[in-house]
Image (cartoon, one colour):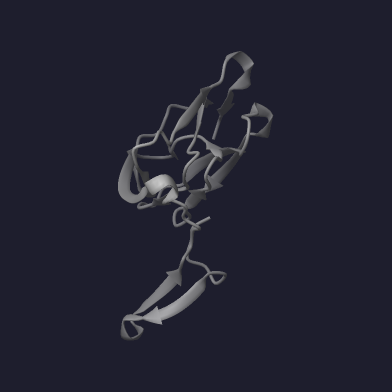
Length: 146
């Protein structure tokens, strides 16, 4: 999780007017000549119950999301390696909590709750393909009734 808590390394900067919560995510973006990208993703909530039918992973890099608003959102992950729907886990992330998906971790795209939500996203740009998707067939998908 990416969040400003007492567990993070803190540095007082800007002549005492700012606390820097230092290095909150282990970003991994430079493999094979990749470069960091900073983007804003604007996510629209899906109708409930929320169908989870597709998962993605980024084999060459991490991907960090940090919410810019006050709405909670859902995080759906399934770990690294071969995709297994039995490994799906769902977490409710609060405003002020971000997430950094490590390279190769299966995850669902942004699942905003409540209202349209903006996320600051730091990920990798480069010439190689860096997004694998898997579509779940039949009973492999799940629905989330939050």
